[in-house]
Length: 340
Image (cartoon, rainbow, N blue to C red; front, side, top):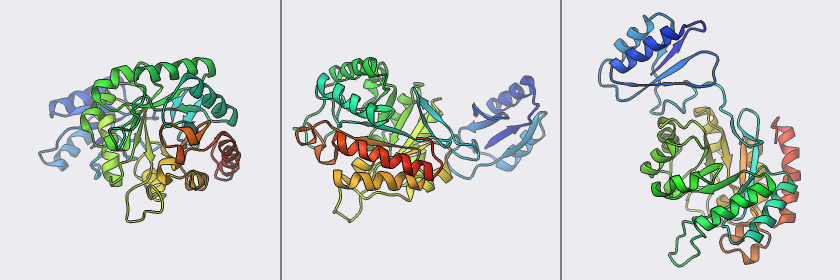
């Protein structure tokens, strides 16, 4: 349920509504950044919903109270009709803005990340991505450099001014990674790791939440709700391909997810064409398709020397290919009224 206050509602009237919400055993959550106050009731409804609506509709300063049929409340467009814009440095996601994050799958060395960052910045991308902690299918594969990798990314950020996007894999790592990162990435394998989602919800650092290989869209949005319920409303949804019977690519790109998510929720939606395809040859086409479909940004793997990458070299663009893709994306962004 949401309670929509009148435009001229006084602070006392807003506080009175919040007190009544608490009296009923709910937690009030005030929607930031809208013209009028909208307050969500968070908690389980175990009594007559119609009576609850009538109670709040009768209160001074209330324009109307409405039930939200979706199980997610804070991510719903009913709660927040306008697009949320997540800002990270000079990058903006949502509300007509699209930003590109790019860089290697894994942090391997200072020289590698420095070269990557310079290529990314020269091509026009706004954020640098890189993994310090890597979830790998095989326990014998490169697992990342850990905190040393985070330190390298932080040093490169100081040199280039590019904000950094990096993955956090467990709730125990949140404090450490948050002390370095500008965007906390939740990988596909952790999309329903609710303890981790709750923990990053306690931060105020933007979160890039990736959809799982077999996660339905509605379950994906509910994962975002976990983060937002903790107070962190700066969530970016990332479509990165799903598992189907088709095996010509690493995953199947669910382009449908872009418009579907943008209808269901106000949160920005980005696409990861690198993990969606698993093959560098296909990344440009899917990246362009995603932007044309309305996504609010892309996260792309780019490596100075893909053939010798410690991980995911097959899906990483080289600097020349990435620069060409950025030129193509600028033309598409202009055609679909996006500011890249």
